[in-house]
View 1 (cartoon, one colour):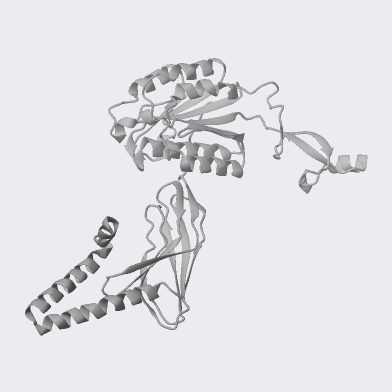
View 2 (view 1 turned 180 degrees about the horizontal axis):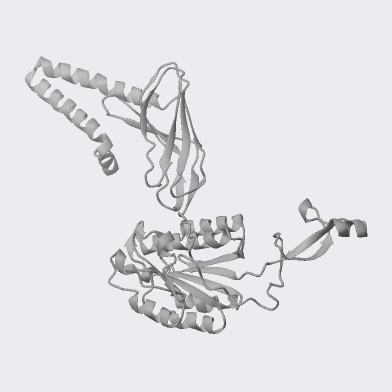
Length: 417
């Protein structure tokens, strides 16, 4: 009984509740006074209510509704597109149909009120600008049939639910530099790779799936067997991007936060080196530890962007702990690019111990004081420059191509004016 009463007074049932109340009052007064006009009012309301229910009930029957969602992966700044089609199989038109394909994407507005004629198909395109990275649910299509008076609302769902992954935006960094690592041995890594590099290291027999441009024709002619070239990594250091996602150091909200700026910096730095055919890896700790092993190529950029699309500054692991736990991945052939909003020096000792072992490093400090925090990175900046660690500072609203640009003297970034 209580549930029925609560259902009757929710916003979408208020009109029906009011109409039923008027009907009861009209009947009570009509029987008490015998006033003929109130009897007619009661008759009109008594006929209108069931007619409105029939109209809303019929509105969601004999319908075929589809949503062709043409985008499942995209990047901030692009658009997600879908085509919604409503087909009325009934012989009577459908009036007052509200069609919506709901999604949590910011800026997504697909709701539309339509009239579907007898055995008629209506379709339209919905373009949604992608404003924020993340993994969003999309659908199912929700159709609401109602009546001209808004007394009843009948809801029916069509199709299933999909997801769309929105990558963070990236910025070209034409002048970004991190110190090159010390290359081991003879200037190249003694490590085989399935990528084609300038460093051919030997030959082997052909295996199914090998590209024809890897065939070594001279050896093939000499041996009578198809032989292909093998390659080693070229003399360039591994780049490891370490993104600090500790909850404690995050400041700001939404797009105007150290979290979002840090993610954009990490994505842009990774892309900067991958387009140069460098080997890039990623380490970050948000909800959990995520490690993308160092590789190169377009697929590696996709893996990194997929990871950065869903990371959040909710971690409880300090940056210093991450550097200590993952130090086995870093050697003299490694360059670290650390992106953090931390203003305390608890992680500095971990970084300096790595640099003493020959690991090269650069730091991007996201200034939390420009995002509403009382903490300033000035002292940390001074400690890093004193240790000869190239340091960049990114503030709220900065153009990354300029903030991570050539504002350097002697290899150390200057504190921005």
